[in-house]
Image 1 (tube, rainbow, N blue to C red):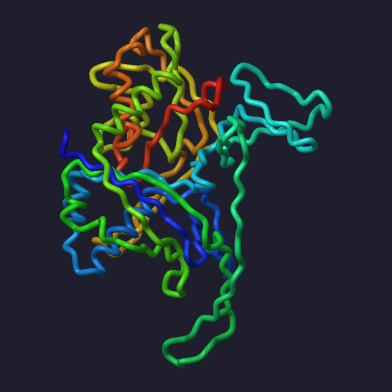
Image 2 (cartoon, rainbow, N blue to C red):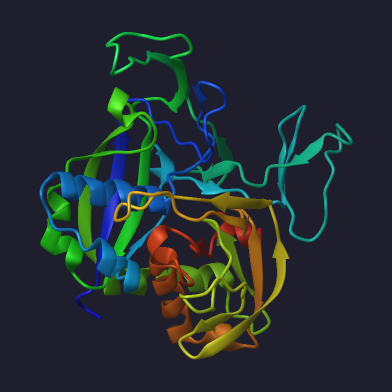
Amino acid sequence: MSDVKVYEIEMEVRTPLVLSSYEAIGNVFSTDWKYIPGHVIRGALFSQLMREGKEVPIREEARDPTVFFQPAYPVLDGRETIPAHPMIYKCKVCKKTVINLEKFEECEEHPFCMESKGGSLVFIDENGNLKFFEYEYVDLESLGINRVIKGRELEMLYSFIGISPNTKFKCRVTDVSGKLGELGIKDLGELKIGRGISRGFGLVELKIEEIEESKLVEDRSREIEKIIGKKEDNPLILLVKSPTFNLSGSKFGLDWKLDLSLGGTELKCEEVILTGRTSISGFSLAGGIPKAKLTNLIDIGSLLFFETGGAIQEEELMKEIARKELRGFGPYSQIGLNFLEVHPIAYGGDLQ
């Protein structure tokens, strides 16, 4: 396992980034994703390597995945954002924020003004306070040119609403085979991501650091132990960071199984608190055709509760959870699905 490499990728947007999960509305391409999905990063990274003349094993990776792509979330002043869960509420008037996993809690000063912020982006500041993150957007227009008549046509004016330059993101990519190292991933200085890259949009500057997975797992397992606590009846609560639907089923099927098998320990999913459902679709680099669309997936910010039966005290279980945070908790994590995380906001305690 010592050969497993994790690449921590820091991204800084250089030209407006348009991230859209649906077709254009008329001639308007807007940004509706709150993060950069793993399958988008995978496609952009492999495409860039192919443009540089590298032989990327696309078909081999499709049959037997060895590279796993976390979603990339924005970073503000070095602090990583995460999706808020449905039990985080904010008053519409005074902006008071409440985290309560047991019951709905009203604002005393403004009754009936609390709303769930599930799915919003949040971060923890230096004082341990929960803060909300908002993107800055830019609105641009681009004129299409007909390649036959070499001129413009009616209705070929397009609008793009994108994330503004200088926005920063971070993610990790886990490589269990060493393929990315052989392809020279650390030499990449930029990627082109999202819509409108032929118009100059979506240029992202990269900083890539290689880290041994074993060290990350060791450090992270201690953090997880601190967050969960050592009481035998403490549940395992996982915060959904990418669309999720299959945690223990076959990689060749589209099962809906949310129970976990972690290093021989079976954990049953007892409850799910949803922010909502979502869908994803993609494009095949190998076939040059659209891929099938997956619908009814558990959306980001949702919470999954697992009964542990006292097994939560086991050190190896903590390490396996940390390893799954890097590689994904089920099939299809090579395209960024099924990434979950143990996080203080899911337990409602001390956020520091």
